[in-house]
Image (tube, rainbow, N blue to C red; front, side):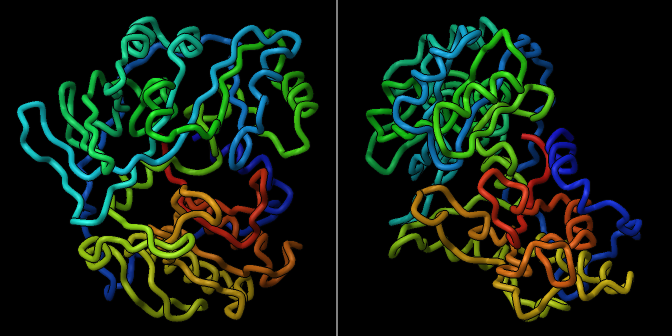
Length: 392
């Protein structure tokens, strides 16, 4: 996978000389794995490759004001499509005939990652059929990605009832790669009516190289900027170093929530009962995690113990796994809310030594199990480890 290759490239020095990983152990009997609440998802549709010369540009939280205008003015840039992203609040979904498919408990909503796209700006990037679909979106029309349609068990003509009382009609389903692996896509106008105004990423077409574009983009802001080419990532979207929300839902299930105080949320108790377990984890202690992620952590610590590298983990610097919250200061869901992330050796020096968040043995044991270290992010978070899995 491209994301694995990209991550390895940024940590090659740290991983040099690491041990060969032994076979993955079976999960402990006390935490049997169960099927998630999400239907099997397939995104194997054959699609047209993206044209040459396209790049994705993003910044951690959002693009600065007037950043898109600066992109358009760069030498060699002849097309820019800015995408806005927020979570819509879904309370019910229905088939075209009116049959209810999913429904949040009273007072709760299902967070659905929604991208607002300018059809005209996006037309040069996507195939003609997708461009026509986007251009025809009305104020209450929506497009689903293939992964979202599979997870939602919906098709064209289905309805999405939002917490604000409005209803979106599914006008089409397209391949994930053309719409940033979004769960739902709206026109820019429709998105603005529903409060989707945060510019998260831009698709840029340039006749120069990636490094040339990156150098130019760095002059537009003092914030760290990510520029990626199509060969580097599976899907053009924001936060390309981590799994998309739809991918996390496909692996760990989908829950309904209601905000409480500050950044914290209350999650549907039925989902918690089915997925979050409390267990004693060697080297880490007693904690609550998603039952699938607990199995990963057991495998990691057992591997380190068998290799005589238990000192890779500092038990006193373990800050936990499940935490029902948004990312601090935003309405983006933390992967801790799924119990699919853990803070290990948090706050220790990232020097690669014993108990370090960048200890090579720890990094490798995590990486081979599709768990990413936040130390390599544009906005580094050493000691944060989260599942990033496969595309989308």
